[in-house]
Amino acid sequence: MGVRDVLFGRKKLKDPARERLFAMSTARITLESELDLKPAGAAGVCFKSLSAGEFVRAENDLQALLDGVASQSGSKVERHTDDMGFEWIVLRDGDFEDLVATVHTVAQEFQDRGFGSQLLAAIFPFNGKFKEGRMYWIYGFKRGAFWPFVPTGEDQQRDNAEELELKAKLEQELPIEPDLTRWFGLFNAPL
Amino acid sequence: MKRKAYGRDAGLTARMLLTSFLLGLLYVGFALVLFYVFNAGLVLMVVIVVGLAIFQYYTSDKLALAASGAKIVSPEEAPQLHAMVERLAAMAELQKPRVAIVDTPMPNAFATGRNQKHAVVAVTTGLWDRLDEREIEGVLAHELTHIANRDVLVMTIASFFATLAALLTRWGLYAGMFGGFGGSRDNNNNSVPVWLIVIAVSFVTYVLSWVLIRTISRYREYAADRGSALITGAPEYLMSALQKISSQMTLIPQRDLREVEGMSAFFIIPPSVKGSISELFMDHPPLEKRLAALEQIAREMGRPVS
View 1 (cartoon, each protein chain N blue to C red):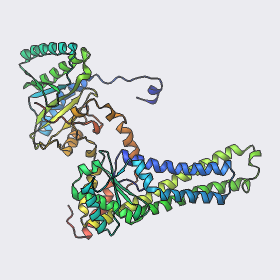
View 2: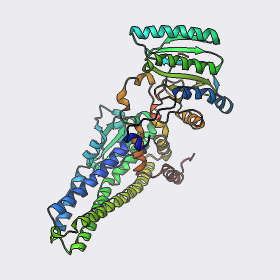
View 3: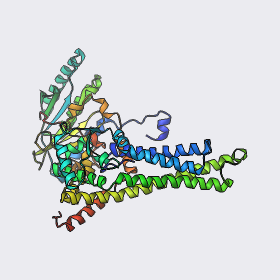
View 4: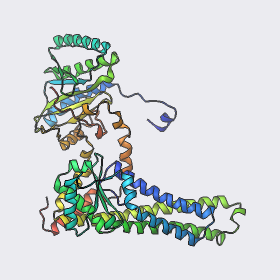
C-alpha cells in the first residue's frame, strides 16, 4: 500500500486466498524434482472447535461434504482431537492435487459459514532426508502464506537452518510468510 | 551514556540506540533553548554541557537498565548465570558486576555502569535459551571487557566533545552574524532566517558527530571481541555465538502455533518496523569483519580455525 492509499483510506485487496493455497500444487514439482521431497500422501487442517450449535451444524455438514468428496476421489478422511484441544481433519490421498483441492474445500466451507477465524492452519507433510524423515509446509489461512517447518524429533526442536534454506529455494514459487517471527511450528501433528 | 547492545536484533538495539540519540537531542535542544531564551553566555553553556555530561555519566547504569527493561537478579534467582559471571570476572581481574536479565526472546546482552563498582551485565532470556554454555561465556566475556575497558567513560567523553562541538559551531555562527551575543538580535528583521540556519547547522553537526561516535563504538566492539578471546582462551565460541545471534534463525519462534493462538498481544508491534530501525542504526561492525578479526586472533592463539 502506498502513502496515498493510506491517506485516502484505500485498501488493496490481497490476492485471492485460493490462488495462494494452490501455489502448493505447482511448487510440489520443484520440491520433488530439485529437492527430492516427496508428498507424504496426507494433509491436515487444524481448527479450533466451538460449542455453539451453529458451529456443530457446520461441522456435521462439512463431514457430509467430505464423505462425498472422499467417495469421489478415493481419499480417506480422518478426524482427530490433539493434546492441545484442537481439532484436525486429516486427508489421505495419493494424488497431491486432490489433497490441496480438498484442503481448499474445507477452508472454503468454514469461511462461507462465517467460521473462517476458527481455522488455524493447513499442513502438508513431505518425506525427505531429514532427521525425522519428513518436513512440513504449513499454510496460515489468516495471512495466506506458507512457511517450512522441520522438526528434529527432539522435544520441540526444529532445524532452522534447513527451514531457511527451503525458504530461499521456494521463494519464487510459493507465497512464503516474510515475517519469520510468525513461523510457529505445529509439533506432533496427527498426520 | 550506556553501553550499546550486542549483536543485531530488533527490539533491544533499536530501543537503546533511539534512547541515546534522543538523549543527545534533548541535551542539545535544552542548551539551545537556554542559549536563546535566556540569552546565556558561552561560559554558562559549557557549564551546562559539562553538568549534563556528568549527570549522564553518573546515571548511565540506571538509564541503560530502564531503557532496556532489564531486572537485576540475585544469585538465588539465577545461580548458574551468577556463577558464570563470577568465574569470568575473576579471570578478567574485575570485580564481579551486578547481573540483570531482560525478558525477551531476542538473544542479546549488554554491559553498563561508569566503573567496576557500578557495572551491570545484562543478558536476555533469548540468549540464555538459545546459546550453549561456552557461547554464553564468550558473550559475557565480551561484555566484561567493555567494563574493563571503561567504555562507558570513553563514550561519555566522546559524546561530550561532540555536544560541545555542536554548541561551539552555533556560538561561532551567532557571534559571526552579530559580532557578539546579547546585542540587538530582536530588532533585526533577518533574525528568523538566521535562527533557522543556526538550528540547521547545529542539527547537522549533531547528526555527524553522532555518526562519528558510532564509529568509535565499532572500534570498541573489536576491542571487546579481542578481550573476550583472551579471557576465555577460546574465540571460536564467541564466533559461533555471534553467528547464532545475528542469523535470521533467531527470529523463528520456538513455540507452537496452537500455543500462541488467541494471544493477539503477541503481534502488537509489527516486527518489520523494529527490523528496519536496527538496520538503519547498526552500531556494531559487520558480522563478517568481526568473525574475520576473531579468526585472526584464534590463529594467533594457536586455536583450531574451522
